[in-house]
Structure formats: C-alpha cells, structure tokens
Image (tube, rainbow, N blue to C red; front, top):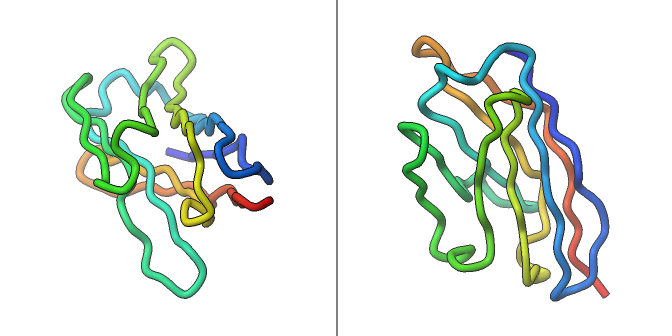
Length: 114
C-alpha cells in the first residue's frame, strides 16, 4: 500500500488545516489507521487513530481540536486540524496496518507560526 499525504503548509496560530492521506489500494478492509507527527528534535508520536471503522482516539494535546476521518469511496483518510498552536508544528505522517504490516506515507510539513 502506498500512502501520499497532502494539505500541509504554513498557518497562523488559531488557524485550520485539513490533511489528506490517499492510499493506492482500497481502504475498505483496513481496520487500523492513524496520523502521527514528529516535531523537530522529538520522537514521532500518535496524534489520532481510527480503528474498527469508527472508533477514534486522540492524543490529549489535540483532543477537541483535531478530527480523524475516512472516506472509503475515495481511499482517503483525513485529519481536520482546528485551533492550531505553534506546538502542533511538525511533519505529519499517516499510517495504516494492512494484513499485519505497517505502511507509512512520507509526511507533510505543518508549520504553525505568526
């Protein structure tokens, strides 16, 4: 499975972005997927996960601000990010688990700065 993220960029604090992760195969049967981010000098961390079709979990730091979703018809996963903060800056990666293997995209950079 190949994954391609898009939608990153520079945004001011308080702004919004929607990230997309387009998959090369149908995601209909994929039960575990998520978004991770890696800030400069820090380890990659889970931001939002989606399992079993509609069960979501979020890092405490993004709860109430970020929303993960999927569109099976478009083979795409999304991350809606609102009320962005400078500490949300980093490279955002999508990941799926497909037949027990992890597949990652190459990432998209999000910079939150005035």
